[in-house]
Length: 357
Ligand code: NAD
Ligand code: GLY
Image 1 (cartoon, rainbow, N blue to C red):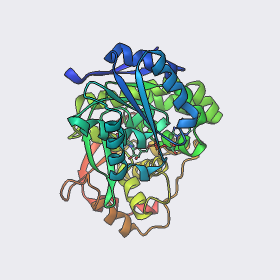
Image 2: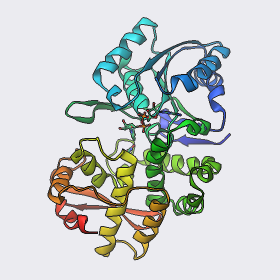
Image 3: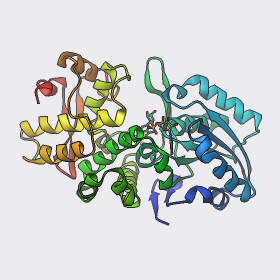
Image 4: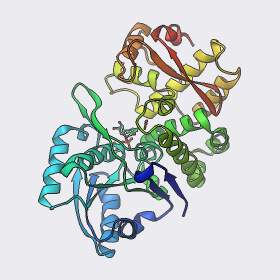
């Protein structure tokens, strides 16, 4: 089975990738952490599909295992559910040598990770991501958080897992909506640093989801390796990790203006990459033809290419409020060509005219 390492000194950890790995969860926990107790956290969509298999595997390895099923959706990533998890971990007498396992998408991963980082000042944490977005992005790199009424991910930590176990078979049950959501981030990795991945996506895209799933192991390997490389060089998000935000400045502005009720995040990222690349190509900062190539792939993948009817001034104001805007300088990510990105320090005036492309 393929394995990728996230090299972080004493906190180095492996990411195991392979079809059917969910049934080996118990064996992996036992091998990595010994005879501990484990608490599995999941949501009410994932539980009927995969919880029984996960529990059977843990019990077959002789581990004491308990589980909790939370409601699905972003609203679960909140302080109330965090407190709920602390209560559950107390009730099941989870200690520092024990582990908490996130079985689900990015919502469950982020919430469970923050609980693991803070309960008893830190218990062990394992990620078993079951959405495309979680497998290629949120389960790797240690960002864990909950939302506040004032904004997303405002309370969080950097807390790396003991290991990540990625079973691509779980993606077969994802709705098309969440499949497409994850694809936005997959295309992003191709754009910012992996022209080979981009070409692979171009080859598969005409065959739709089935053709992409036929090559999913390769696609996951490319994306996870890219994320692991960036995290290894900039765990705390002070420089290079910013490149993962290609398309995100515009995406966050659109999501904010739509109050998170319009485009899904991955779709907004796809739109953001499209608008950004048209802009930078017009400014001579991107090789001619790059935007056409990106647009051709995005449209094959049914990604949105049209900015919603939001006044440009509102979008630009929303960018200025993005928590990643350091002072008045906005550090935007552009691509020179497919597979090569740069960080460009600028200000919101950079985006004037973006709704005209
Ligand atoms: P999610 O966890 O809400 O999952 C999406 C939906 O798919 C949910 O309804 C879930 O119940 C369902 N689901 C999960 N696995 C399934 C499966 N295998 N089959 C069928 N249904 C399944 O959302 P997400 O898109 O995975 O993650 C979004 C979250 O991730 C956001 O909160 C975002 O802030 C966070 N995020 C974190 C990072 C990070 O670095 N920590 C990076 C990107 C995004
Ligand atoms: N998803 C962006 C990051 O992990 O930094």
